[in-house]
Every structure is written in structure tokens, then in C-alpha cells.
Image (cartoon, rainbow, N blue to C red; front, side):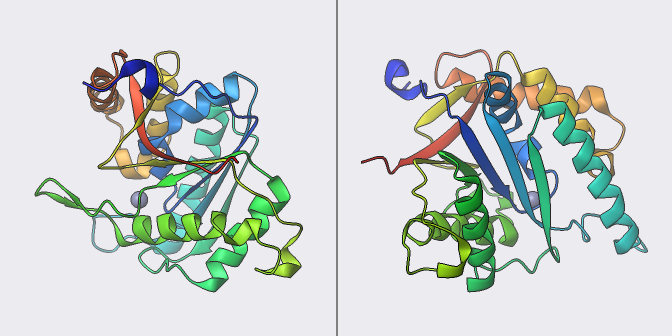
Length: 240
Ligand SMILES: [Zn+2]
């Protein structure tokens, strides 16, 4: 059991940029936190890097139709969470790489939005137990976000055409094997369930089952910090 007083984050961000690989990743990872911050007055933006064209398990699925469907699902989920804006960069699923092109796109958004908090996935998490290898796109996006924040967005000679430099204050990394900060989602866990259920192409129509899984995972994360429901993060702070 960690030191609870030190591990529950007291910060309330003003402007947040979450960056994830696939359209349903934020709902799985950090939706309770994003909804709570939005409720508390933060301006919360979301960028998804991949268009979701390979998120199917049945042979013969139509990738273009899936992309359209998933864009509608992302719109609905963003409304549930109270996001100020969301966008998709349109990379093909499975082909997101930590390239200068992707970092330039992220730096441009960081410099124009000027978030104090950025949220993404921990790219160093590869093996979750013996049954899940973290997706290539998740790892690529996590590293691209870290590189875009530190040092690129804050350094004027990196991507000089992408606006004035901006130092991100804090990065929250979800899907981590080394959590050190727990966000209370007691008030928003049902919105997390509702938002995840918007991604029907991925989770189907079993909303009761989705709710059970989300609540069980949130309760498990919360137990580490003395909270009924929580999302856990590894946090990097760059405030000087
Ligand atoms: Zn994903």
C-alpha cells in the first residue's frame, strides 16, 4: 500500500491534451479522469493518431466503413466526456511510428493549445502479465508524445514553423506498470462506462458486461490508493 496522501494527485489542470493511438483507447485508459477534469472546469482536448481501420475480428470487414463508424463512435464518446475538442490524425492502424512527421504534428498541437497537462500511454510497458503484449501503436504514440513534450515543444529550434515554444507542466502516463499517482473517478466511473459503450464496434452491445469490467478494474486501481474507483498513472513533472 503506497503513501496515500502523497499518491493522490491534488492538481487540477486548466487545459489538457490527451493523445492516444486508437479511437477507444482513452475510454479504456483515462476517461474517468478526463471527465472529472472537464467537470471541474478544465478545457480537455483529445488527439487520436490512428483511424481505427483494423479494429475488427471478423474476416471480410470493410475497413473504410469501419473508419466512418468509429469516427461517429468517437464523436459520441467525446460528448459523454465533455471534451472541448477531439481530432483524428488518420494514420493506418498498426503503422503508427514515432517519426519526425508525427512529432511535428504533436508539437504543433501542443504549441497551439498550450496545455499544462498532457495524457498518453506509458511506452515502456510491454508485457502485461503473460497474456497481453502492449500494442505497437500504443508504444509508438507514447514515445512520440514524450519526445514531443520533452524537449521538442519547449525548444524553439525544434520545428520552428510550428508556433512559439511551450513547456508542458505534467505528463500523465496510463497503462503503466509503474504507477505513482491515482486519480479519483468515483464521480465519473459511470460516464467512463457510458463513453466506452459508445464504441460499439469494439465492445458490442453488452453494456452490463462492459460496466462490470470497467468498475472491477477501477476498483482494483483504487484499492492501491484507498479510493473506491481510480485510474492509475506514472507522472512526469517538468515545472521548474
Ligand atoms: Zn489501442
